[in-house]
Image 1 (tube, rainbow, N blue to C red):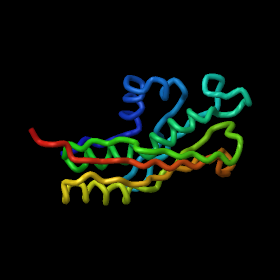
Image 2: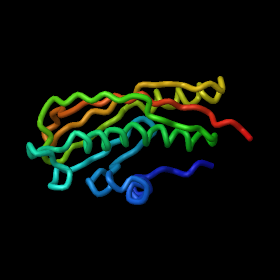
Image 3: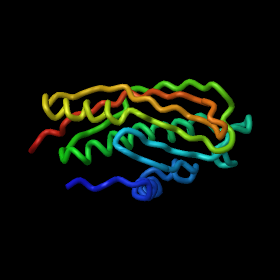
Length: 155
């Protein structure tokens, strides 16, 4: 039986394994099989010289929104599967200030890729998207990640 991922477990993981994300204020707020929502609030520690959210902090939050869905499906599969970001692209459309919410709705796409990797025993690549919204609901940035997944060889 796979362990259920919860925001509390993931946020504790950030503290110990990704402290730069944790201390920048990146937090998983919600996770379902289809969607993950990550928030980060613009603060002194994560700002750029233009008094908005630093692009790298947006990258950490958006990567978590996509990657946690991959982690969740790997856990649910019960298989040993490796995951790696192969490429990333970010587009910034508006100055990011206040609380920013990154949403990824690609959970079903992730599940299909994990299922295919298990069935074929071949590595898979998939593009997963996360978009950042400010408190008014306006888009501030859009990120795409190419995740590579592959079954680990049995020894």
